[in-house]
Length: 193
Image 1: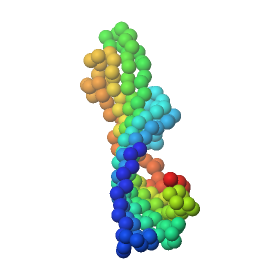
Image 2 (image 1 turned 90 degrees about the vertical axis):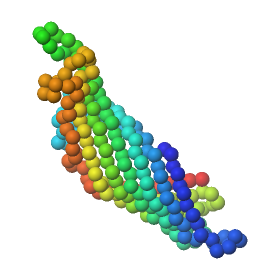
Image 3 (image 1 turned 180 degrees about the vertical axis):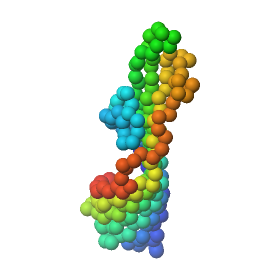
Image 4 (image 1 turned 30 degrees about the vertical axis):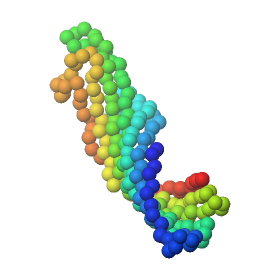
């Protein structure tokens, strides 16, 4: 996870140690590893093999505003838009009989998912000692979109195609995943030094 925080703080004089209103922007690169155990998702055709893992990349862009209440206590509000992606793949071995003779076929099943979420995170930031920061607060998110694509691809034998498409790849589903909650909630707790 790469985290970039750009910010600015106002000060009235160089020798003034009073904290002022602060603000900044965030940009994250998100790399996710998914652990799974499913062969179908709601409203999507069942795959013939189970999906057990996946990878994904995403981007998060946001802003923060921080209001000091006391020297060791501050109220912060963060807002960000994040994209989450996941790509799952499973192989299936199945005999096929082109021309009457059985031939082993290898079929790759894939599910590619993409989600976008807008999140608001108000927190209380506490510094009990210099450079140690404790943060806690509720997190509320709204799912803006979700898309899922499920495909099957014949990768062996070479030249094999699906009867339905005349190509080695057929799309079983391409659309919105039903049953996904539009609203997300969490409690965030953190520490930094």
